[in-house]
Image (cartoon, rainbow, N blue to C red; front, side, top):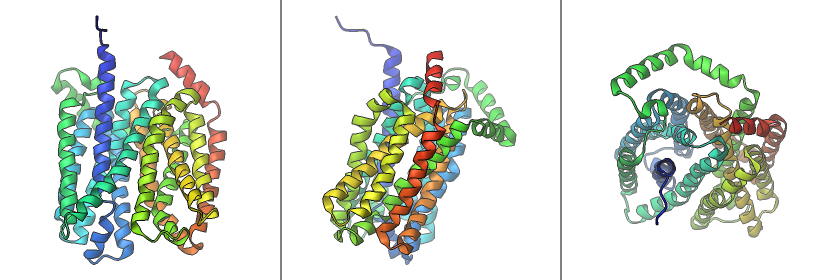
Length: 426
């Protein structure tokens, strides 16, 4: 006799899978362009600074969109916003492939950045369907999607460019657009509406309600909501740590190729590429096999603190042991582990510390600071690398990570007991 399936549990698992695939396909499409965009920008006559600025342009778009999209998902529902951003991403990939000049390439990447603000909406979907106790483990799925996209996207992009000599931008962009189209079909068919206020009810009534609430949010509710969130000291600590964690990870990522060449003698681009692939693979492994059970056992605050410590330690080991290559792989493992521990813990804390009904807004707030870090991180690390004698500049950023560790140890006291009381109340 077969066991009767729990329909609620089946719906929850199906939603988690849909959200995972949405983020994964987004990240693969983004990652595919990482190996070729700077070279294409050069072909358009851009300087090296302009070529690397494409990543910052993308992050500026994300910064502008992520908070708004998180709030709009609270107003209109999660599914509508996710589908809209997938369509925008598809259009952006097509425009990237057809861009005839550097300025139009910049515009296309900015549009893609706006669409990537849907990460806060995906996190809100997970928040809707999980209990506070299991939320951290479920948020780790987004970390796995990031790791897979980071590992597979650049590899797929490089492979396609090898077989499309002279047309790599068109080929890679159109394959990425194809992935977005598949993602759109998947979301339309498989992704349920997780925000309960919009899951049922007459559509006209929902539209009127959404229109009224959106108008209120534009007039003044946004500021009131922000003040409610920022009045919570623990939430402010989480916001600061969200900035520092992303700042450290993307900063190391931005100068890693230079450090591999200057400090470790890995001038071969294939060797450098293996290093980036290794980080992606470790992100997937640690998020899937280590972070999820550890968050359930130790709680988000301790895992976040551990992640902050590992990021700082990796920045000390990278320059200190150069050019010892075995220690290089240990350092890269710590970079991946620090991010894999801290990122899902931060997402879970942002959601669980938020007042009822503001989870999407809170996650968008946190992701906004993360997007800001993705803009200033590469720029700051680049200047420090140039002025402080190469890889040794990482010592200064390691000190900054350790300051974050102290902030976490002091600022997150009592959070675990607060969250336990909240979970028991549910």
